[in-house]
Image 1 (cartoon, helix red, strand yellow):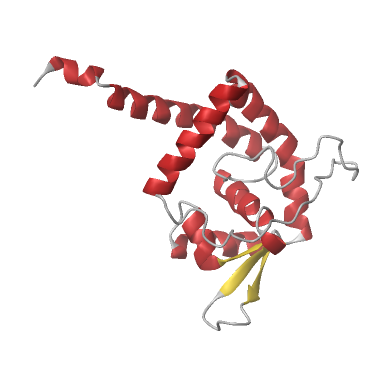
Image 2 (cartoon, one colour):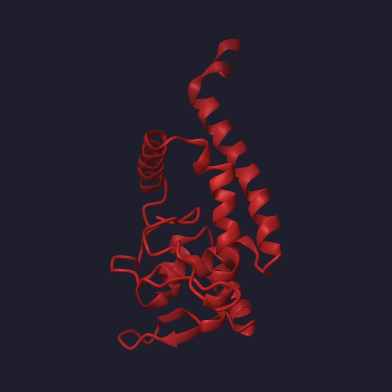
Length: 187
């Protein structure tokens, strides 16, 4: 075996991606635990809140996350028991149902979002100047679309814009609207 094969930039790129993911995931997990959310629950709430009507068909939610359809069902069952999500029957297809964020789910997301965004700024986006960040986002979207083409399933409609609330119920001035300040794993 050629010893220089391990200096291949392809191996370096994937290795760095895994290292960054592991480091960010650990920081995000700790921060989300303070709000009684797992990373997957945060992702589900984020995906739903960024979708038109704060809802997605269960199959589209599975396609947008790293979960199987049965995995999404288990997560939604747990989140429904916790009052964060509810299910709604699909009027045009009896076999389908929607997962819909409840007001309690939106509040939990709004409570966790400021700290989450600060972690993203401190440990990810703030490490890059604007041109480097735009290039990274473009590259990540191209790779994501190639390896996970269903990642945007069900999100073709315009998302509902809303301002997050602070713990005192007021809306902060630097709101996070659909399409701005996106948490990781979102488009």
